[in-house]
Image (cartoon, rainbow, N blue to C red; front, side, top):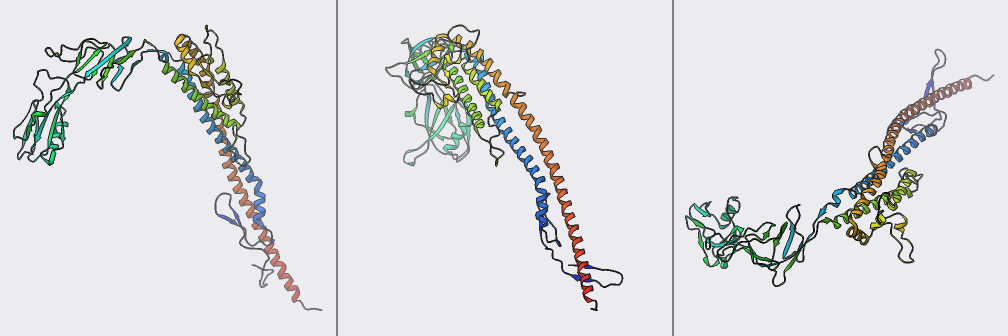
Amino acid sequence: MSTQSVGSGTSSTTSSSSYKTGDQLQSLGGSTPLQVTGLASGLDTNAIVTALMATQQQQVTNLTNQQTGLTAMNTQLKSIQAALTKVADDAQALGSPSLFAFTQTITSTNPTLIGATATSNNGAVVGGYQVSVTQLASASQRTFQFTSPTSADTVTIDGQQISLAAGASAQDMVNAINSNSNASVWATVTSSPNNGPATVVLSDRATGAPATAGSFIAASDTAGALTEQTQYAQAGVDAQYTINGGATQYSSSNTISGAPASGTPNSTTNPGATQTIPGVSLSLNGITGSTPVTVTVSSPAPSTQNITTAIQQFVTDYNAAVTQIQTQLAQTPSSSNPTQGTLFGDQDLQSLLSNMRDEMDATLGGLTGSITSMLDIGVSTGAASGTGAPSQSSISGQLTLNTTPLTAALTGNGSAVKSMLQSWSINFSFMVNNEASPGGTIDSRIQGDDTQISYLTNQIDNLNVANTQKQNDLVQEFAQMEAALASSQSTSSWLTSQISALPVA
């Protein structure tokens, strides 16, 4: 509805226009809708502005999709870079001299009864040893009936005083003893038959026979809280064992080190322990009976187990990296999802896979003998069995480790295996690190993409600002046009009414 004044002193007349009200246009810069009201033309101004802005908005959409795709690509490249770095580290570990450091294997045919470990890195005496155990070392024990003292009491155990308050329980005394780092015994409360007085057992913290026969765990108290049950008293004993059928040896401990054991000579029953396995610590866990336990100390040599484990770790990580790369190479792009297929058919990664496989099959120069490649120690993509076709994992370049030729090579010529792995390790890790290490090909790609992503962010922000301004300008232009049309329609309506009012001749 509008009002138009024509000429001086002429009264105004109102008339209804034909435009629509309440049409809305969404603002590009926010959620507040823009409005173009009073459309005198009868045109759908919102639709016109939206159509005019569509091309501009498509530019923003295209840049946003490009940025999203680059971000997704960088995420995949970083994941592949981490996987390849792990493979390169594994390869370098295979060339490390420490992998072939001489070690000794110490085994027991019955570790449940007798455990055996090395005492130091200085080595142990090579050989097989028959160990028999006829007695385990045990601690001295004394058992007491406990009566709660009616007044403060002091219990003295091997010269160490333990204070008890009036009314203290057996558990109070046990807690006081066990928490005292200077005490020579451990204390335990045992259940009493028929809910009678509590019983406390004191056991020496050290195993072995007492230095003087009949003298062990001196205990007394001032208020009579403890009454010994002498029938349960036990003196500690030394472990008794033999090595290779020799004289009986004695040890106050059930752990026998590679030095002479610490048994205390005791007149005729314990002449002293002198025989051990130099460099080996024995854990006596049980009585062997009539069948000795065999402890074997191998000759110093590189650890076949450690080398096998390191190679298997490399194979596992190599296969994981190859699978990850191949998955990305095979993922086809999607017109509706810019994050999909960002590395589809990537030539750099395809070339890397080819180079990695070549290195696994390569015969290394400068080596003599029969071990000149990874194939010679059982690392390959697998071979078809009989007339069978190659497996899919073999076709895709997945590695396998056959431990039979590896063990044979390590046993027969460990130095040749070491030389081959060290040479191969240099070549392989150098090739992979050219791609994966900081400053490598993948790292350069990631940094370049990050720069492009930042540039696109600025472009998108600038376009959004420009588009918002353009949309506002269009809205204002249409609003002005509609105002002009409304004014014109009002004037036309007034003139028509004036003409109609003129007298007819």
